[in-house]
Image (cartoon, rainbow, N blue to C red; front, side, top):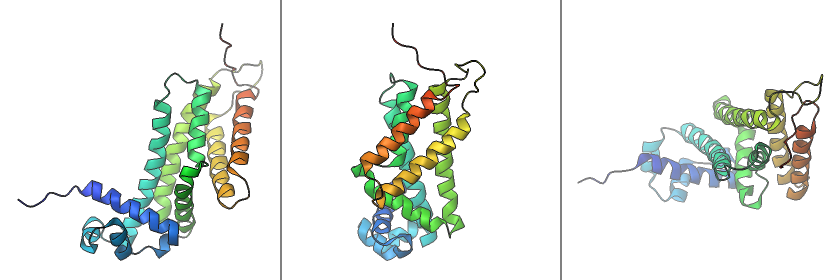
Length: 211
């Protein structure tokens, strides 16, 4: 019997090889032949999974975005008893990619973002990933700040606006750490200060103290 091939598993393996090469040479320096060698598959196997380099890069961008989003969801699910504010902090920390073990992933993400600035096909998947992360932050911010104003006459924070701000801050901190403008610890302090400011902003319902 002919051996059955798990194409989805092979596509993900190829995407990982694309990411490693993109980290080393940038997306423009990735070739299908080099990807085949790094993934330890034949060039024909790569070509059966992807009709072109552009299609392969698009899949790799989606792969990285899904990996980050899934890691955020996994971290939130691992602590169901955590407060909404704590959950928001964990999500922001994962999105910012500040920890050492995520440094390569951060470089890959920014390499794709830089290429996407001059490539609309690559920009599309990045927008989709950002939209998914923003949607998640909107939900967490809504839960963390609640809906009703705590102070008379004070308006509640707008979750959409706050989510856009937090996502942009996390993304900027990723860049600042990668280029050495900030240390990971300094970036964590900036992120923490912003989250504390969000919780303490007029109009935000404070969590009740335990009795």
